[in-house]
Length: 583
Image 1 (spheres, helix red, strand yellow):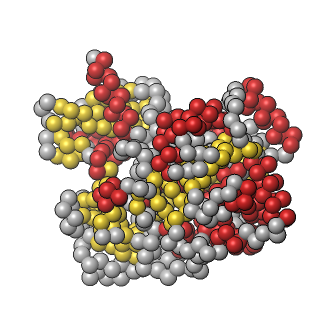
Image 2 (cartoon, rainbow, N blue to C red; image 1 turned 60 degrees about the vertical axis):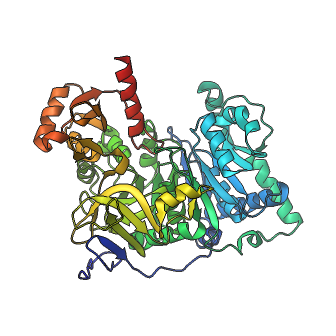
Image 3 (spheres, rainbow, N blue to C red; image 1 turned 180 degrees about the vertical axis):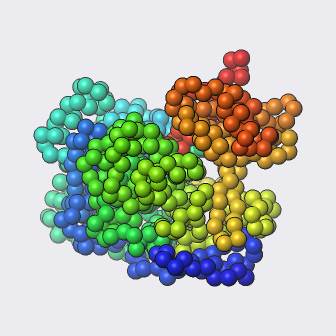
């Protein structure tokens, strides 16, 4: 057994109980339990009433907002519309496909209040991907942004979706601003296509729900009061980076446990009703859904929604116009901000903490952020399948190049290919067990059995644990490169390349090689010209063992990424294969 380890000023006191050298469990009493997400949402509305809950901020500064009371009333009315007008039943799946905007929380909370299951759908999905997710989830109703109505029209007949509700990016802006914005989007940007869908607008759906609620004197809480924590709340689809997109079944308890864990870790740094969080990551992604939407709603924060952070200048007005105290992001988002003069010359003075996840945080980015902003980036770790947070750096005790320690009531082990715990400092697969771990993949028992074993989630990530219980990510198991029998982890090589100031970002992959089995290739995006491939290789030779040094450097203008900014190495590999065939 190891000694107890307590951070004197940390917001929570982790108790390390390590049965073996690389096992780790943290135990911490949780705050008040809600039986369901709707119970939490209603409680927040009662606590913060007329305070602003959400503001959508457009790149030009145009905006609209909703208070906690408005979100609560609108989501109640939408729940009635789903149950009474559309005739949906508890447990029916309802998909939501839109970027960050005011309609998303109202629709999502309404679906959950109706006792239905929410299905988050990436609005950038192709017709094929949309068809797969609608059919796989069994969604019978869909709330979709008007910008993608033409895609839906093309595939609707091939799905089980029977009811369509349309919304817009300008939903609930003032009439004048909404009119101007819609004209610009429709006629100038040509972002709103023509369509012939038989659909109801969200405004009309909510009004219909209000009318029914009043006429029948309905108590909306009757839809959700019987919900228990073990019941399914969300089908959150994996990004499909390792194969066909699968729906992680997340219960009310999974999501609420993670909310409680986040609050236990960071709650003493969050002033109830006084925070302002920037949501540039899409809320249909599990990181922003749990942390930004749920956890900060619970604490009465004002959530500033950026529909799209690309280009990164789209975030400027949000920083200019609002006292941002928190931001969640991935390495590429923070790196992009640090490459903007408007951000580095006038950094946000109100910022408390930036929360990082989704991909490895480069040391150079973390150091530059602290230098420019004056506050830290607290890196965490998790997966869609874990709601998502598994580990977190205690705020005020951030550890460089570490994902921190397990969230309360979470066990983490590092194991070899046979499931045996490895020694301290040795690399192995990260596995985790806790109340935030999914029930399984929707209708995929065989794939569930591959990742859930005896209650442990096998993450597919390679990591190590230090003597004091801090965990470190090495890389994705499937991204590991084998050079002459030696393991090469792309994150390590990318981090070395990132130390060159002229480099914007990079992606490192393994390609077949007759002599070494695989060879290391680096795809690099430059911030400024003047750096050659040989310069990068020479630099890497001073940072890395010889077998880790890239054999080839390929310069590109950009790299393929997920909607949250994570570089897609599988797509980079596809580029490499295509290039080899062309040669």
